[in-house]
Length: 175
Ligand code: AR6
Image (cartoon, rainbow, N blue to C red; front, side):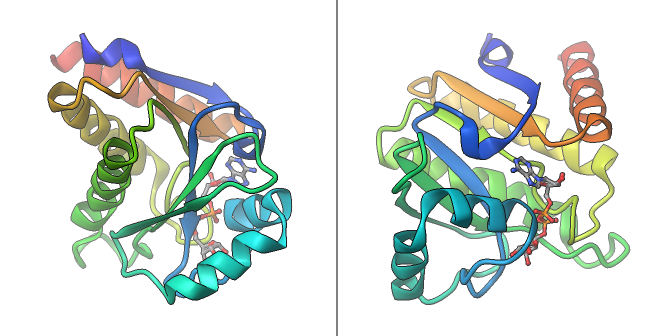
């Protein structure tokens, strides 16, 4: 049962000892606030140098870099949608963030990965909807990609943690 590979914790993603952590970046990939700022600070300046060479990322897409000073070997940078009321394809774009990040996980033979709550900070995506999309999308991906051993959702605050736990329980009851 792939759902046992999904965990939810409250914590700081920069401290996670996993193969890869995911960054909730912006289209420029040149850093910002929130989890993006925290990851760049913890990884050190060489992360920005590598991101500059990539030259940007479309919303819903993902790119991969090294982790530099982070405990994680890799950083997968994905760009979530800005919430604009829900009628601008936000749900599909958010699901693409998770799918495209996990495609890179499989491609690079990564076994353990940590996600932040993409789009629910500065980009204002309602966390109850976003957390359910996150859980459902990664669970579907795990079904066809058995090489992945753990997907960890790292929630920075209590409200986010509650939303992800609720989403995981809701998904469990539906399958
Ligand atoms: N570990 C885990 N989660 C964190 C951490 C951390 N160290 N720090 C913040 N969060 P946000 P977005 C949570 O705003 O909504 C940036 O400026 C935070 O509490 O980081 O996708 C980018 O450059 C929230 O639950 O990302 C973009 O411009 C979640 O991470 C823009 O923000 C996401 O919040 C992206 O906005």
